Length: 229
Image (cartoon, rainbow, N blue to C red; front, side):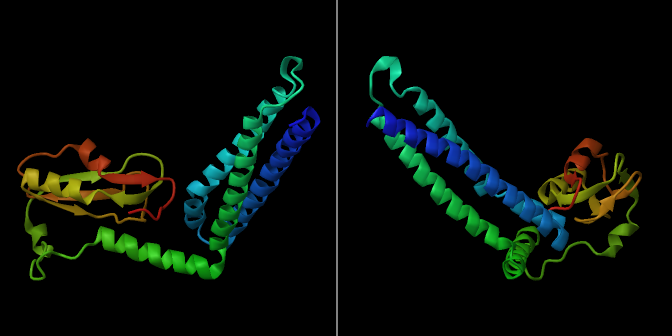
């Protein structure tokens, strides 16, 4: 490859990728902001965390940086030529960038109302199946309201800035209840907003005091509600 051809190729790829990256992600951010007003903000946040967005940033940036680095090796030390391996790598990265761009466009199509409803329904059913699995024995029943007749041994209140309950670590709470020989009643559900002094849970009939740190750790909170169970 001649010096002129290599210089033109690397310069075109570098400047083109820089422009494409700016235009694509400007449109992505605008669509995400627009969708946050039309849909639930937590839904848009979940879509914005799609790995495809981060892979697109990585591939676009890698193509741009490698084209600039390869340009520095053109006519290195007056050799009058350019490494063909660098040209092949640049072409490969360019093809990968086009493939990632196509995938990114397909992912953004999920913001269409019909796709959003389908995605929300499918993911919601998946979360319900994960959080509330079928009981191994259909005749098995959990504790009824009679457990409230047991002595109240411990209460846990929230302390801190306003937060939303994102998930409950049911296996950990069950293990703590079994270890203490009591029953834990969670009074705040997933999705509830909790503020200072909000009652989180009660412990009935426990033979030992449970660690508040372990109980708080089993209740995951965040600044907003999330889809993840």
